[in-house]
Length: 98
Length: 248
Image 1 (cartoon, rainbow over the protein chains, first blue to last red):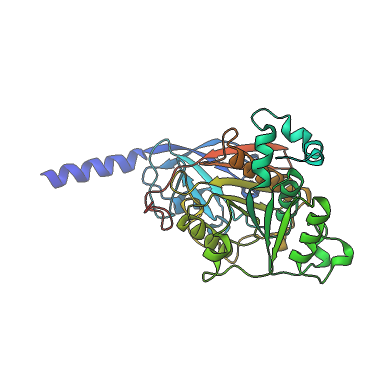
Image 2: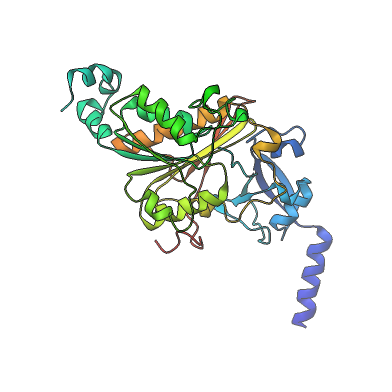
């Protein structure tokens, strides 16, 4: 019975397509993948609940190899981690020249 | 005690609030290590020498190349082929004989990093690759030395002041080596004045740290976009799982 209820909730959630908002900023050249977005400009994006760092990059069409650091709420965030609603995300390429 | 010449030379420093003659004397007694004498190291070292920092260590293993001269303002056309530290030390000594410049022509490695940073008050990261930055980061953490990180790419740059145990370190922010496919200055270029901006800001952070002035860029990654002429600040936190500084 419990299993059926959980399955029903999960299916219901899936059918409703529950999404969450993230606030994203990209820096130092990654903006070239996002027409209309400028360096450091914050924008909101709707993603499905459970979206990972890697999933966000797919949605933004930013090649994984170009992203050196992903931060969520000011902390390192791995491509395999899942976001929470309202997370503030920052993406950087390697700004490593000197 | 400042000499008459020094009082005149550093008048504009001494006039600054909370600097004064005492602050100038402190600068003259300070030891700063500038690692990398290229695009970032040139302006950083120039401003530190001009300010009257008493001891500057200049570390680099490269020689001056023609392609450096578009941005690496410590070096001139006639320096091509010379060790960068020899060329750079010469310019700094010519600028200010109060500054003792120690030229260290070597590559930072895991074996020598601790020894290289040991005798300095603050380290300025002006390197051009993350492998060396990680070594410096770890050496500064192990010896509790502040490090001013700087980096540039194309039309943009960034910097952050790392205070071991107090704020996030480089590994809190940048965990892995960059992908070999990621963009680099050698591929996408670098506007010469951009490392000028970032290097000057790095030297400002050094002087603020040495004199206890203002608020350091600790836990704040300052990014600069030359194309929109804008600065953005990203607030950072220490990562409790950081492989370099979590134990502090």
